[in-house]
Length: 222
Image 1 (cartoon, one colour):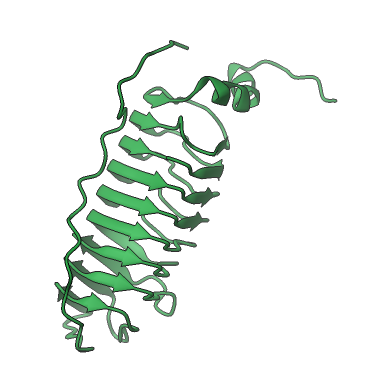
Image 2: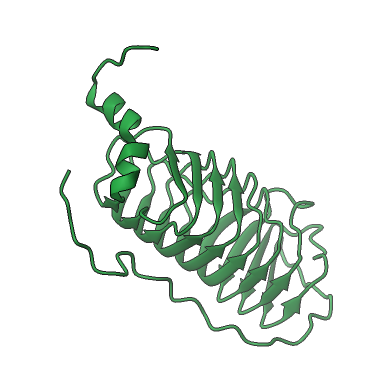
């Protein structure tokens, strides 16, 4: 276990699109073959998603919008700002250059997605499927990740500042410049191969039990 003196930031921060005021959305949504797109509008009311299976959001601002009534709806997001939105049970292909504040991702499916230049703040990930995805320049700031599953994902320049990780899966992940030092807690299901991640001295103690199990050593039960 090498000791290092990293330069800050260890993980490069996301390059999120600047926030701009947008005109109010007029409530119309043109759906063709199950697909719809909205550009450069401010949305603060329910979306009429009947018959819509995929929606692309480009340079939009969303406030208090819930997608919970459309489980499985596929989102493609670029340059957007979400505030206190419910994104539970959504499916995604790409999330880029966007910020999510105070959002819920309970049961969300990001499996196989490209997540690049995205900032998550004060958000909840519970039972979220984050598997086999590519995360690049992503920040989880004061987020709670409970039984979130990153299995077989690639994480590059990812930070977890002030976040709680509870029973999070990192099995078979490829990690590069993943900063766990400032996480409130690092509760992992296992510590198979965490090369490419950075932890603090204090977190070595927190993870000692998992490190011991990973080494194959037997531990006397109290």
